[in-house]
Amino acid sequence: MRPAVALFAAVLGLLPLTGAAAPVLTPPDAGIDGLMQAYDGQVPGAAVLVLHDGQPVFRRGYGLAVVEDGTPVTAASNFRLASVSKQFTAAAVLLLVEDGRLGLDQPARQWLPELPPAAAGITLRHLLSHTSGLLDYEDLMDPADTRQVHDADVLALLSRQDRLNFAPGTQYRYSNSGYALLALIVGRASGQDFAAFLQQRIFRPLGMTHTVAHQDGVDTVAARAYGYSRIDGRWQRTDQSTTSAVLGDGGIYSSLDDLARWDAALYDDRLLSKTSRRAMFSPATPTPEPDVPHYGFGWRLNGPVQWHSGESIGFRNVIVRHPEKHLTVIVLTNRNDPEPYPLAQKIAQRWLDTLQ
Image (tube, rainbow, N blue to C red; front, top):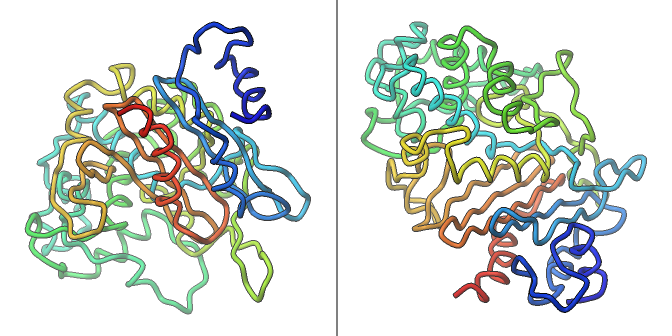
């Protein structure tokens, strides 16, 4: 281990400064810095967290959260999670199932009667597992309209389409539409705004003090990392698109520090019951996607590995969990490419090689 990494870990209280045995696993070398070299310097950056047995064994920011003023990425920088947000939407539904307010096999139209007759067979379970057959709302938007759409607008778009891609429950097709509708169902079943429900039932109880389902003009994002894309040879801010205001499928901002609290809650009953966690992480449907043999509720499942990526304009993120090894890798980036899942796999492998 390089001196800089050892000092960083010591500051976190992870390594003793004497010859005593280390209380947690430590990296075999400092190769993560090499893997993250493209994110370092005066460019849109990344935040990397490795958790083992609930402890941060690697936690570091690279590059810039705000290119224009040189604000660096830190463990407290808040990134737009994009589709990593779906696991929080799924958790919100499961909390309301525990409350007795929702049922996984309830028809979606029970809560959203605006949906067309073709959607009569769609249940909450179908929405959670991407087996509803709903059309993707992004395909229904007017490309000439530059206004941002919200979850309610997604419902309005779908209500005018009395057709599905396939009969509910017969196929898998990744659906942002389904998770936007789930956010509306959470709101109607709880009697609360979806963002407020997340704050009251998930973020605040877990101490995720800087995590927010962001709504322009309603709240602010502390320590915000802005999204960028490389255009005409330079990094340009591309932080928002017409779909960035949809909350249920990708509108949450969070940081490494807050996501560490979320990860810890997935190991015990502090938030979700064992039954709910089993439902979340059990294969709900097979998928044809590479590296995703099955999908649960808000999580991609590859054998014992639980993961989800998130991609939106200016952001690429991933969380990869190896619960049998009590190992989690989180990579958050504020740039339009590349997909960080292979990078997270390489980072995880550095620890997995020593845990065999």
